Image (cartoon, rainbow, N blue to C red; front, side, top):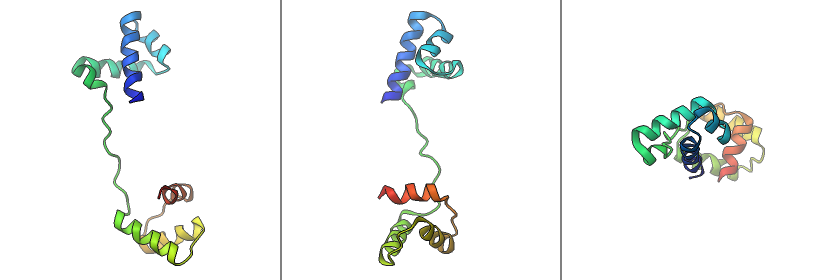
Length: 108
């Protein structure tokens, strides 16, 4: 919602200033980003400013396997991220970085 508001404000600044460079500077975005937003606005109006997330890359480990991993870690009292990392690498063949694995395991 905030990003859509920012895009809408950019369009308003553009109408006021009649200058892509100034409007981009006011919004703290690159001129090219401003041009991209103008294209979206011209093609679809306000609906074009709504951010279309692609969903991202699919997880390397399924949700069911994450449940199994969490259960295993809990049942076997594995408390450190490096131990969890070794277990996942050995059993699932996925080599997550330690900081990323920490972020994933903190999620739930």
